[in-house]
View 1 (cartoon, rainbow, N blue to C red):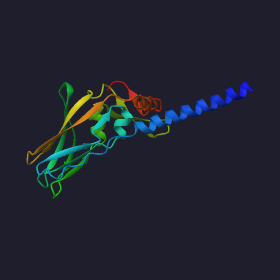
View 2 (view 1 turned 90 degrees about the horizontal axis):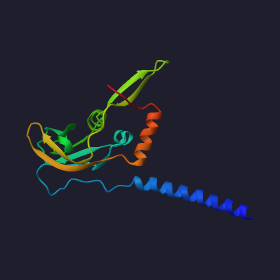
View 3 (view 1 turned 180 degrees about the vertical axis):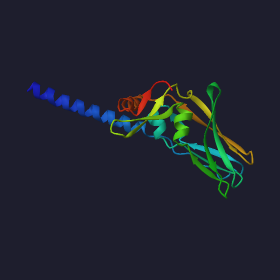
View 4 (view 1 turned 60 degrees about the vertical axis):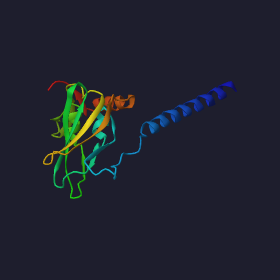
Length: 191
């Protein structure tokens, strides 16, 4: 009888463990509501969604980092620059201003990999002739901290700023990157 109870207790304990781990994964994906442009501001403004980014390779490459702005001169081009700790300054996106003075642009793969991760895209052919592309990590990514996002019109010189947080990778991010390394999608080495 005690073996049956121990067996049931073990099953309940394992089930409870799965529920706790599953709940942690669900809650770690939750975030604050996306920012929106303020309609009562007539001059240039910019927002970024999400406003927090963790520096895991899989996280950065999988995150759709979007900048929205308004109050700019129509048909201008806006350049997005991150200014942060240790004199970090990287241009990571550009967008075309619409007729209503708004723009929307996202950070592309090159801005994420070369700019934020300070890595590069490389590849090699396999024996069967297929090209295997991977991310080559040769140095640490940009420093963590609070960054100023500066959106500047190329023609008008209009500027707007907001902030975003760059944080260290979470335990889950590190686990994804470890798996990416094991699968050959992420490699570490020299240029």
